[in-house]
Image 1: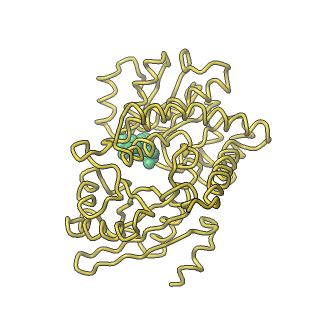
Image 2: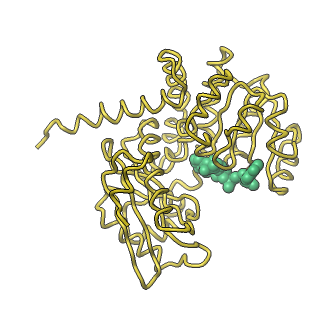
Image 3: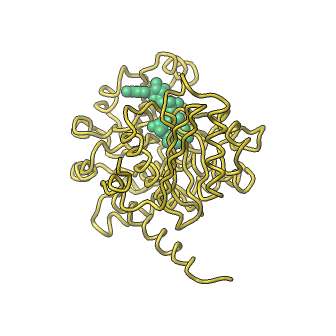
Length: 360
Ligand SMILES: NC(=O)c1ccc[n+]([C@@H]2O[C@H](COP(=O)([O-])OP(=O)(O)OC[C@H]3O[C@@H](n4cnc5c(N)ncnc54)[C@H](O)[C@@H]3O)[C@@H](O)[C@H]2O)c1
C-alpha cells in the first residue's frame, strides 16, 4: 500500500508522522498518527477495532488524529493532535503482552505522542500500557490517573449548552427550556443531572432498556420516549445527541424541532454540507468537538499530576470558547463548525509559530 498517497485524501492535509507497529507474537498491528505537534505532543486515544482492511484502519487514524489537533487546540491545551488504532477484535486478541508491546511502541516515540482510552480500550488497559511507557493518560485513579472522563465531558457539554442558550435566547441557562437527550450512557447520565439541577425540563431516549430503567428510577421527572425519531420530532428547544456519530443527517435535520443542537457524540455531522442545512433552517449547532472536550481536558490533566478541580475549571471554559465561536460565526457569516475550525487553526498557527523563537 502506498501510505503517503493515501494521506492526500480529504481527511489529511499533511500529517507529521504515521508509524506502523507490528509484533507478530502477540498479534499486535497498530498505527500511530501524529497530525500536528505545533502546540505540544500529540494527545489522543487508542481505538481497538476490527477494521475490515488496513486501508480502513489507516483512514480512521488519519481522520481521528487530525480531529484531535483541532479539539486540543480549542480546549486551550498545550497539546497537539495524535491518535492510534490497534487493528483487530479486542474480544479475541487483547492480552497483557499485546498491550505492553503497544506501550513500548508508544514509548519509542519519546513523548511525541500521548495515548489514552477510546473505543475498545479502557482505563484498566491504560494501566497495563503504562507499565511500558510514561506517555499515557486515562489511567485509573489508583495509578495516578484521571479515571472516568465522562464526568467532565458532561460538564463541558453543559457549559457549551449554556453558551448556546445565551446566544439563542439571551440568558446562559437551560431553566424553563425543554432538552431532548438521545443516549443515556456514561455522558448522557451525568448531563441529565446538570440539566435537571439547572431547571430544564428533560425528555430522553436510549436503545438500551436498562438505561431507560435507570433514568425512570433516578429522575422520575424526566419524560422517556421510544426512540430518537420520536425525540427529535417532539416539542424540544435543545437536542443533545449523546449516542453514536452521524446524528445530524438528511433525515434528522429536516425533522428537528429544536432550534439549538449541543451534544456529546463525536462526529455528529453525517457529511460535509449538513452544517449549512442546519444554518439555513436557523438551527444553532455548537460543534461537537468543542463542547465534548471535557474528557480530553480531564485526561490531559494527568500529565501535570491529576487535579480534579483544576481540570474542572478548564472544562468550565468551554462556555467561553463556545460563546466566542458562535459570535465569530455570526461576525464572519459562516456556520459555527467553520468558525471553530478557523479559531483552532489560528491558535495552532499563532502559538505554534512561537517555537521559531530560538531559546538555546
Ligand atoms: N465518554 C467520554 O468522555 C466522551 C468524550 C468525548 C466524546 N464522547 C462521545 O459521546 C458519546 C457518548 O459517549 P459515552 O461515553 O456516554 O458512551 P456510552 O457507550 O457509555 O453510551 C452511549 C449510549 O447511547 C445509547 N445508544 C446507542 N445507539 C443509540 C440510538 N440509536 N438511540 C439512542 N441511544 C443509543 C447506548 O445504548 C448507550 O447507552 C459517544 O459518541 C462518544 O464518542 C464521549
